[in-house]
Image (cartoon, rainbow, N blue to C red; front, side, top):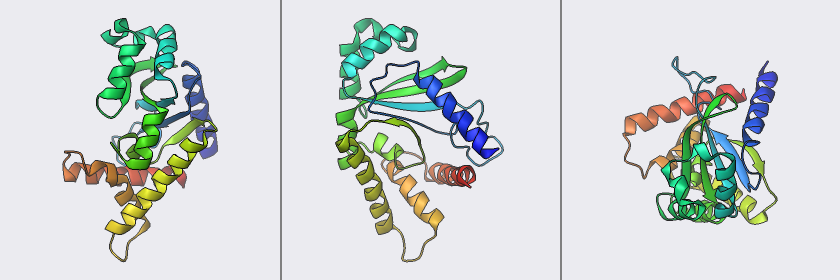
Length: 212
């Protein structure tokens, strides 16, 4: 049953991906729609799916996506792909999001980030936004053969483990390690400590259930 569910989810993710331009260096999906979080209120089947698309040329990608998925964009679509890319690269964490999109029968949101910006974040933790997300459980749907990108993805995980080890006491459990790693990207955000702690424990329990 678990294998059948996994295969069904994979087919769903690939079908959704087919609605977008193919020029992706990395695509992954995350959140409670992928990994069920612990708790009675968790509704995985109807939960929104969160995607991130990494692209080498954001202007060209947005240009193609505007032709395929004009309705996904806010009023900024009338300004064209160059302005959208400028906003993406110069504000926030370097990610442009389209949200509350119905695609292939599922509610999704998706963020678009430049490959170069992502690599910088993975190596230097400039924002620790997408890099931080990639330190938590995600489902990689596709990744190209870019050696620099793959190396940066690997280094980000190793750096996260190293940082977590430095902050943990001499004796700790596997759960303690996971929660410390998953909490790295929350440490710079103005979120309540109680909320973050509860969310991380739910993520951990849900991930264990998914992988067991």
